[in-house]
Image (tube, rainbow, N blue to C red; front, side, top):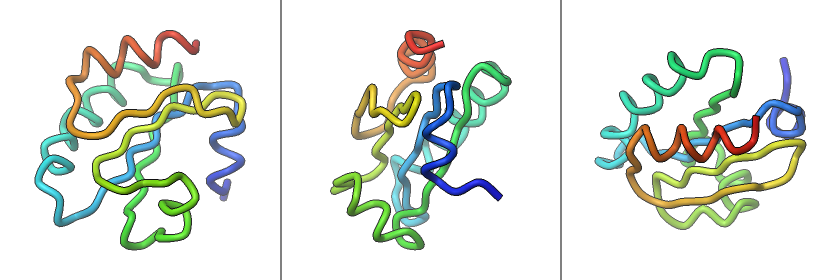
Length: 98
């Protein structure tokens, strides 16, 4: 199985959703993330990271509130936002890195 750094190091854009199971806005983002996954197909990868199960990784990327959404390409952080976001805005941001 690939590890986190191998996944974000690829040449396909990766949307990383740092979330928590107890977070209301994170729950609102779940269908948005699923919709993006269905729409983008192989053009991008989506990775969900539970901050309570991955505390070191969340700390490494300075996740202070959830949801925190990051976009990586070739291992480089390209975009960061905090809070619930509309699918169209995230899709437009990901498309910049195809």
